[in-house]
Image (cartoon, rainbow, N blue to C red; front, top):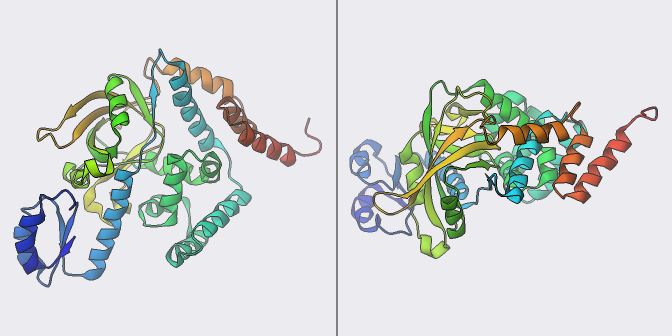
Length: 362
């Protein structure tokens, strides 16, 4: 909702408690005089006197709101449940494989062509694609991730929907993300937050898994500022049949063998939001699931874990020895996908490997 300064002072107190109102923006001629009353209302995101800044802010918040409403793929590790463990472990092994696979110019071209087809009617995204083709370098990957571009959308869609071939095409950029997060780690232990909408079944599943470990299969965006995460939980849960939850995560950057995470605020359009980004495959221990004090959302408290957790280490080491031994190549990827039951896709990579072998290869 966008209001003017004078009208906002009258209407915001009346509509602030409505569940249909998620965020409010004040657009006025005198920014400083309207800040005092606006800051009294939690749903007022910001006060603007520049239309371009307002539009940029709305676009960024829309991106965040989409992330809140889109499901996050979570895998559980339970020593007593082989089926669940299979998906948990294979997701870890697959990500390790993708991070080690070499890239090719053919795969990059296929990715760009696929994106051009996907966004053929979107002139803005096509402009981004042309810029990406011309100027991309590994040190710019976090800048591209924070932009409102095809790159963020394509990368997260591939991971969220488990589109394994698209993940394969994106492997170079996932690896660049990994290296950038690893190279700019947080210095001290952090508590971070993420607002999310989940189904009732997902909530019940989390409640049943207390003290177990889970992994998140996509890039997991959080904030050091709780007040950044909370506004996106407002809304009509009954209407969309989703439940508001706040992930509260404790993470120690000094933990050995944990997937990297880092503060990427310096690359973002709005650095004040203190965004902390976790890698796909990050492992967390689920500590508690409780109602908030005002009973308006659930709080899911987790702690970042390393791959060396006692109930994980042996299983992961065994699977990696079985599937990722020697040089990591298309044969490795095919083996993993075959074990996952993705037979057609595995055959596709085996066939490609055979075509790429030299005639003298034994």
